[in-house]
Image (cartoon, rainbow, N blue to C red; front, side):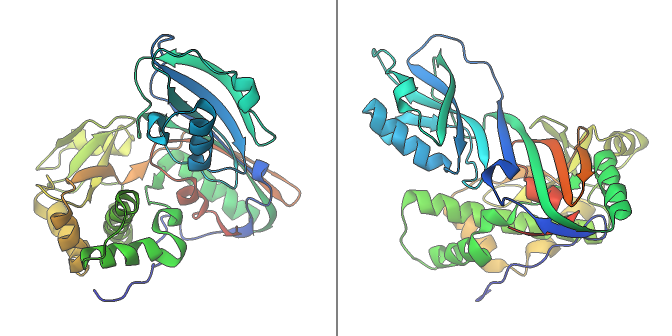
Amino acid sequence: MTSFSLPVWPYVYGGPSGGGKIRVLPEDFIVEETLGFEPSGAGEHAFLQIRKTGENTEYVARQLARFAEIRQRDIGFAGLKDRHAVTTQWFSVWLPGKPDPDWAVFASASIEVLQVVRHARKLQRGVLAGNRFQLLVRDWRGDRDKADARLAAIKAQGIANYFGAQRFGHQGRNVEQALRLFQGKKVSRELRGIYLSAARSFLFNQLLAARVAAQNWNRPLPGDVYMFDKSHSRFKADAQDQDIAGRVSAGAIHPTGVLWGQGDSGVSGEALALEMEAIERFSELVRGLQNSGVEIERRPLRVNVPDLAWRFADDQLHLSFSLPAGSYATALLREVIDWDD
């Protein structure tokens, strides 16, 4: 693999039924983070729930470190949030033996501190339960009946759990940088993590695309590894049976795809053959990830969206739904609209 271009991965429901504009204003894209636990109320870390408008997560983290006069690495957050949105998320600030500063002074026109509570440990990446979205599509145009049918199908059957385009950088440049990293380019630790994630995400999307094209992304294959809905727990089933098929059909468990790295992918048989066929032509990425030291993981191929709600108002489409941590709102949007961002 000597050059790279980001493909258009296949749609589950036949492609968009309309078009429109998203994120014309930050308040058109509202995201509220849900932690996977309750802060205890005591400890050395101040947990701040912050609503920010038009600011990215790392900017707020830098400002918090400066305001509290601590190192930036002593600031924690569970996930990155888009700048072009109104987002509510949690940050932790390590204040060992120190009182809380006046957080009201930290607030600004674009940053609002909603609540503060203490906890014993730093907030770590990936501990989210999920995110709640409220989205507005402006200047919507298209076939409303088809859009209604498509949204109803998504609510009933879920979406393919593609990584969003933002994971890959502008025109897929993060994957290009991963290739250069594997060819010996020196980068910072932070950028290395971004590029490795982009490479793994790209290979996952390739595998998921192959299963969407084969119409088995939401069906069991012999040798599949399954993940429980709303859980990271998983198990392998070498053979299909009515119990497995019924649980997959009901959305209680999901087939998984590989996030490539070192180790055993866990799958076998037909599932393994399909997995390897989907990624083998990207040998530079495969070898680079194996040599990078990251460990193989699994990710569900499907995401349920049972609380999806929508309404049309003149030329606007209003959407609200929840997704588990690591899943992308754009993976849902792409099935419904072509958008100008």
